Each structure stands twice: as structure tokens, then as C-alpha cells.
Image (cartoon, rainbow, N blue to C red; front, side, top):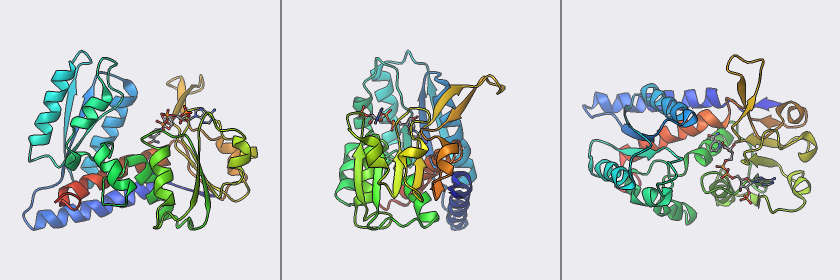
Length: 293
Ligand SMILES: NC(=O)c1ccc[n+]([C@@H]2O[C@H](COP(=O)([O-])OP(=O)(O)OC[C@H]3O[C@@H](n4cnc5c(N)ncnc54)[C@H](OP(=O)(O)O)[C@@H]3O)[C@@H](O)[C@H]2O)c1
């Protein structure tokens, strides 16, 4: 079984980005600049943001963190978004989700200038991606594509089964893997909680992508021998043996599935680091102005 090592691939891509940035600096140009907006003190969100800021440093980017209390009003947050849209020194920015309940996430995401939407969540970018125009691709699906590409996993004519249809992972990754390109040209089945005979479906998958949010949902008897299994899930479970009292596990039963799969992502260390790395790729794209000029 080949482990799909997201830490290693992300490190290599960030080192390549750093070289590109250095080449720009040598020409006397400024470096790419990513801003991140964090609202409240959600520990998982704070930890994601920390990783993103650290990745910026690794790629040679400048970063700015805007952290506000969860009592911020919708108007207050829209003001920050407007400021970032106008700030010419910032190439791209993200608003870390989830937002406090009193703020409508969609309203905030719609206010982000699509040119700076490096998370790729704005309908303009989703729409452009769907019809094959250059667009910022959501970070987790882009990270998955980069992982498939790095390990040269064949996708053409293969059957991909995606479990989970979220706007940020399942739906975009299923669209991307069915487009006319590599990675792509696959026949894709998108499953969700209302799918019947899920195990029967997943056993037909050459490539199985699990984005469900349920620890160890995918067991060995749900996959076919030699499948590539990509585990997007990040679930915290109690673990009295660990210092923190909990640990991170995926949606896939790693131990059982590793005996049957040909390729498998670990959790942590698989899709997670690739997601952050994909954000760095999108920020570089924003800096170069290749999509919107
Ligand atoms: N590694 C990363 O960088 C990264 C990035 C994003 C998310 N994640 C993780 O990925 C997981 C999924 O997150 P998400 O935001 O994509 O999804 P989500 O919005 O939480 O939705 C979960 C999806 O799984 C489906 N589902 C739930 N139970 C199911 C079942 N019993 N059988 C079949 N399908 C089922 C749901 O179906 P319905 O639509 O019918 O409800 C839904 O489409 C979470 O653990 C999250 O933390 C990781």
C-alpha cells in the first residue's frame, strides 16, 4: 500500500512556490500577501488559521491576520470585507468558517471580491470552475487533485465514488474529477445520506473519496482490492491515552482499509496539509493576476 503523504507533497509544492517568490523579489517586486479573517475563538478555526499563516511564511508570502470577537455585527464584518476588497496590497483573503450564528455566511461570502476569493467559495468562481473557465478552485478539492497528480494515480475511465456532497468538498471534487482533463475523465458517483446501497456503490470505486464527518465510517468491506482511498474527514475522538485526551481520526478505518487499498491518505497528514497548500497555490494565482487580470 502506498501512503499518500500530504505533508511531503505540500512541503515540496511550498518549496517550489518559495522559489517563484524569490525570483519575483530578485526582480524588485513585492511578495504575495494573504489575509485571513478569524471571528471568535473556535479552537479548530484558530488552529487552521495558525497553519495557514505558518504556510505563508514557508512559501515566502506576507500574511495578515484580522481577529475579531464573536460579538461582531454582520455590518462590522462586511466593513472588514469591503476594506480587504479595496486594499491593493492584499492579493487574496479568506474568511474562516464557521461564522457565529447571527451572521449569514452566504451574505459574507457573496461580498468577497471574486478576484480575491482564494478559498474559491464565491458563486462566480464555482460557476467558472463548472464551465471550465480559469477559477479559484476550493482548497480541499484542489489539494486532492494535487495529491492524485503527484502520485500519478490514473483517473481516466476510472470509477470515482465520492461520499458527501458539501459545497466545499464533495460536490466540487466530483465535478473536477469528471471534467475533460487530468486528473479527471473519470465516471463519478456522488453519494450522500439518502443514497441506498452505499457499500455496494463504494465497492465499485477505483477511487473512493470520503468527506462525511463520521469517524471510521468507511470499513474494509466497503472498498475493492487495490482501490485508492482519499480520506477527507477530520474528526476529534476521545483518547484517554493521549496527552490532550482526544485525537484526530478520519472517515476511513485506516487499519482495516490499509490491508486492501493500493493508495491511502493518513489522518492527520493527508488531505489536511494539502488543503492549506492549495490555498497557497490560489494565493500565488491571485498574485500573478492570471484569472482576472
Ligand atoms: N481535511 C480537510 O482539509 C478538510 C476540509 C473540509 C472538511 N473536512 C472534513 O471532512 C468531513 C466532511 O466535511 P464537509 O464540510 O465536506 O461535509 P458536511 O457539510 O459536514 O456534510 C457531510 C456530507 O456527508 C453526508 N453524509 C452524512 N452521513 C452520511 C451517511 N451515513 N451516508 C452517506 N453520506 C453521509 C451528508 O449527506 P447529506 O447531504 O444528505 O446530509 C453530507 O453531504 C468533516 O470531517 C470535515 O471536518 C476536512
